[in-house]
Structure formats: C-alpha cells, structure tokens
Length: 67
Image (cartoon, rainbow, N blue to C red; front, side, top):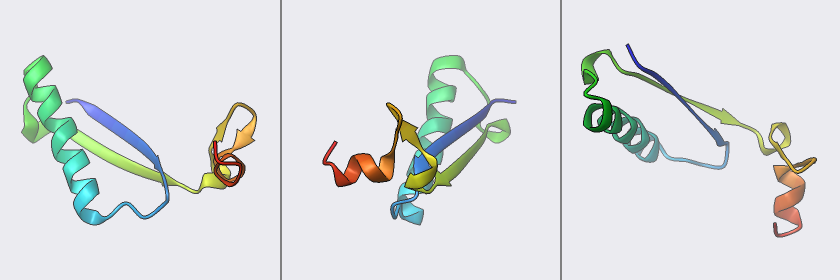
C-alpha cells in the first residue's frame, strides 16, 4: 500500500487543486510502479509559512523579501 505525503504552504490551495494533486500522485504511482490506485493513500499537509524554513529563514520572511 503506497503512502504519499504532500506538504505545501497554507496559501489558499483550493479543494479542486488538492483533488488534482491527489489524483495526479495516485496516477503517477500507477503509471511508474504499477501500483493499485485503490490501495494508494495520499495525504496533504498544509503548513503556515512561519513553520517552513529555507536557508535559515521562514518562508514568510523570504516572501516579504521577494525571494
């Protein structure tokens, strides 16, 4: 049973966009590894930009700086 965890920043991804991510990740495992889509689990975690850091800075600060 494949398990895929997608982590994104909480910035307004719509339910439709998340559904497409789930469908796409599931299909990728079917196409590449021949996995059964009925037993493939995909979860999406949305994190506040203050809880995600890159290069020693939060994403919140990086976005304010235009990075």
